[in-house]
Image (cartoon, rainbow, N blue to C red; front, side):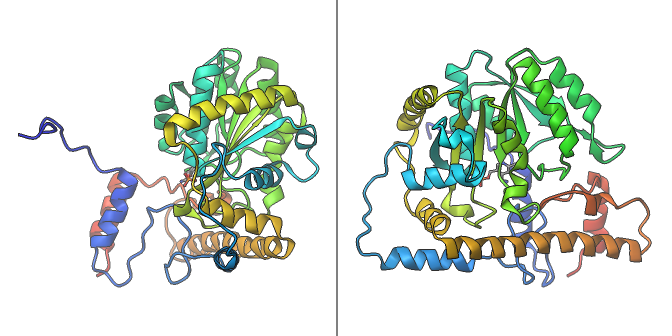
Length: 372
Ligand code: PMP
């Protein structure tokens, strides 16, 4: 008998299960609404032109070798990522108070940050929004943090439960870590307003709460890289310390290349360098050092003015198309006199629509309106 014979089969991840059902479906007009990846009008994945150019450039450069990267990854990529995140004129960068390490996309950045905090932070409890990306609680629990929820979404208004959020963060133990989606909250598409962000910031400062930003969609929400980073920059600007997980999966379309970075903004350059030395001790026994190709693509684009400009144009085109798809869905629902208020479809931000359809309604649509 197998030594693994006692294992039971674990259930399919519900989101990946949608993709499995999609792949099995013979309908010529099928649409995969489960996957969090950008698609063209033809329903195909998109590789940005600027990414193809960067790859070509890398291939043509015969001086490039396949040596290991340092534990913290490609130095140039890390520097450029911090600049993209905090802005070219960021005082924290100028004062060398930011440490940035290349990680395995957004997920890996969250995991490394979580594990670092579990080992070295005095209040290893993280508050995550309710609801949030389904992987957040698992990533942080595995990292060794105690995971609690704060109220975020209000089904009655299909908007932010701001009062609930303030109450829950207000009663969190002082020093607790708070996970914030930098923009385009997944899965609700509901973000605080600038005034609300300001109030959240004041509350967090007064209680010494530590922000951990998940920045998976910079530029993908509004089409503007600076606009989507403004709340992170607001927090970093007041001298407070924070962590930020960055992903290039969506905004450069580098999903499977696993390109991301963890930045920790510290009070002083000395603290930042000690933090970095400890991050290395978290990374080394996990995977030694990150892969070179994807980060080289990102760095090639970020450091070249013309390529960077082309990237922003292609990025804006993706964001604009998402915004226009929302409008078209809303208009189509209205044109058919569909009961209910669907304005949340156009109010929400980013790539997800929180439809509020329950499982019976979804099952009914699948059963009665599936088109073969
Ligand atoms: N955070 C959020 C909020 C996400 O939606 C995602 C991707 N769905 C991630 C992190 C992780 O993405 P990746 O690891 O591919 O960068």
